[in-house]
Image (cartoon, rainbow, N blue to C red):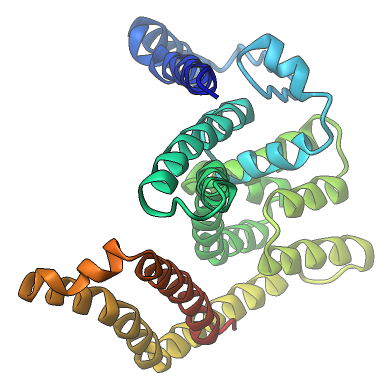
Length: 328
């Protein structure tokens, strides 16, 4: 047991050093970043040099050994898709390394917390939640970034549909409308439509390229757009008018969603107040009478009461969030 802590500390320090090296590498070599920036600008401005790497890269980690190791696990396909959908710059291997590093930190912190406050409980009742909670933080961050990116894409979609519709009315092809979206709009809409257009230019059928777009951005509104385009190509019809109506329906849904949020504002505010009351009241009592909570920290039963109170507070937060979240 005495040698357990030095080994854990050594592993944590080693992993943190490696992660720090990967994070600070662009800062240590600013001239490389400047060279890449200038080369990218030259390649964009050049009209004669159209050399494009058509090989699809799936780099799981900048560390070659870790990349080869991660390729053996089927779950890495889902992790790679999550990283791609979140729009972050680091490869999946960065978050795979960060997760066990945070888990080890949580394990050490949980052991100290267990010995200080809950010595009567088995250690795994404290260390496992700490380690698990910190281990999933990188993936919760990726899910948060993915949600923000999808929300922005959904807000950009009506404008993108209008651009394609106006391009079709002007007599251009459907691919020209997608090119207009990729050039005129911001990310993530421009990046996703540009990927789809590149797949079509490299020989992928329009049907498959649009299906791949829905896999990268699994939104209902985008699925309606893809289905409309596929059906129009198979059965015919006025695609410009279809896209105009679809953009109008999406905007109307946004208005309805805003109306629902206004109507549910009182319930959400009540939920915030109910969550804040015990926390604010606890701090107020502590400042007014510091001896009031001494029994909770000195007596073993008081610590368990505080722990269970915190757990039920978290359960109440999730329950109220489910109640006040209305999907339109």
